[in-house]
Image 1: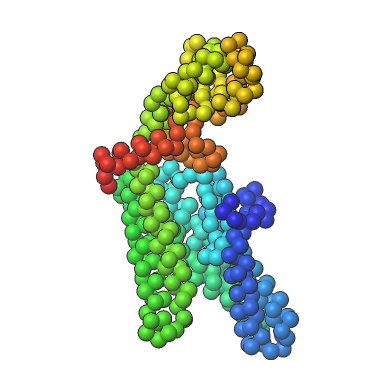
Image 2 (image 1 turned 60 degrees about the vertical axis):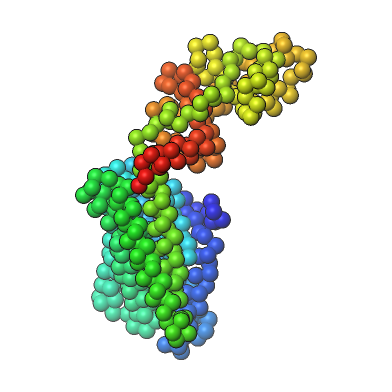
Length: 374
């Protein structure tokens, strides 16, 4: 998935690492091991490097714990967690769907920062109670401060940060519209993105200093992801209330199971020149299978007049279908998850409504945007 490497499961949740994470792991290890070696010369280069690597791994473990906080609350709400991924900017828990209420969305969002604050408290308490000295005290202090920074940074009220999701939940509660919450929190996220970029550019332009270069990367990350979230929310709002039946292609490629292959070939030439795959129905209109032009090649042309479509078609068990009353938003997710370009739409009784294509959804979306501009 997007070049990431699967390294196992965490509490049943698939765990991935993006290649960019290894760069950050290397930089953090080298940076902190150098600091330890300078602060505690008695450690020696090898031990300082080992402690630097251990510290880096513990820092990223804190990020994983943060994402597990989101994940466990989501799971309690019946939301499947598809994966947790570590990458250059931290971590990401990918959820199957959004929470159903603003209150549930709030608790999913706030769970991560609460875990980070809890870790900050625990590490700080260990430092006071155990009173370690030397390198151990330094490492504990760093871990505590990083967890505090992780919590506070993520509480910035702009998407895609946790604070943005909290803001989204609050706007959703006030307006009753989850998509307005996303758009508003995305705009705030873009503002913080520009602030971060500006704080990184000014020292670079006026003093030639790369001190705040990291702010530039964070700013671009906020801008891109906040903009994408706002755009996706607008698409979701336009599709809300629509079902699979609303996007069925007119004059869908449907043939009768009792047609001979010769009749099927002639009908295709006359009516469906641009189609290569067809849905097959019985005399009652129920979907029973699918046939493609390639399937004709399995039968000699001399036998086309004697062979019916039902003898060559792929049975219904091999065809992925969707119910006509299924929300169109869920259909879009299904198309993406299974990497499909089209789906047959059927009613509860199995009667075929027609074929739903990605292109038809896009056309429907364009028409609604033109009719109801945001």
